[in-house]
Amino acid sequence: MERRITILKLATLTAILAALSFIPMVPAGHAYGNTAIWQIGFSGNCDNPHLCGPPFGLGGFWGWVEFDQGGVGDATVAECSHLFSDTPPLSGAQSFLIEIENWYVAPGSAGPMTFFLGDGEVTIVGHTGGSPMTVPLGAVFPAPFDTGFPAVPGHYSTSEILGFSAPGVAFQYQVVQIPNR
Image 1 (cartoon, rainbow, N blue to C red):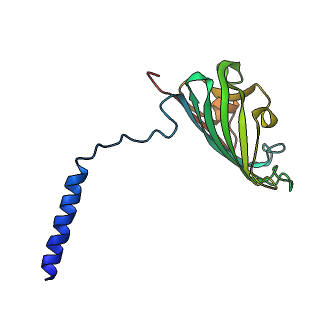
Image 2 (cartoon, rainbow, N blue to C red; image 1 turned 180 degrees about the vertical axis):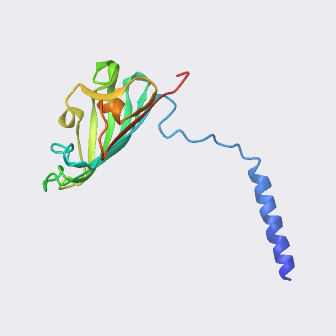
Image 3 (cartoon, rainbow, N blue to C red; image 1 turned 45 degrees about the horizontal axis):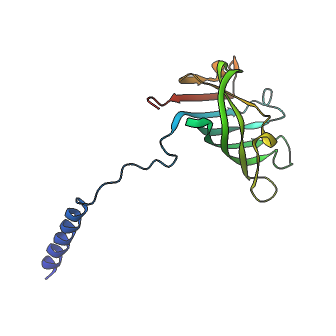
């Protein structure tokens, strides 16, 4: 009897798998669409109290940016600072969700090809002292905002970004240009 149930289960599974093979397969999801022309992953960490004083303090930030066609994009940044202030949002962990409404490339801190943010919205979540809040980009970052990211594909480390390296300090950028878009 048990062997009969096992065979029945196997036959049912085989029938289900066969039926699934006739369902059109959906391509991998493009959660952010297929208009991205640049993506940047970045991180910065500082555990050196002699170099990482106010306004940032000890801690770090980690994030991702997508620059799309038409001057729009998205960014997500998490940061955590320590031993700087007891006043939110100057200490603790925050997350910044950025809707970019105007980005462009111009001469700036990363050289002749630097990404700038002209406009957008920022939603701040975390150690804000209250509920998440959404504000214009200019309320958090001066507009236009020089991101410091080069508009040149490649991997950039601390000495290339800051011009020096030091114990307890690590910065990384990975800039990717998506071809044929």
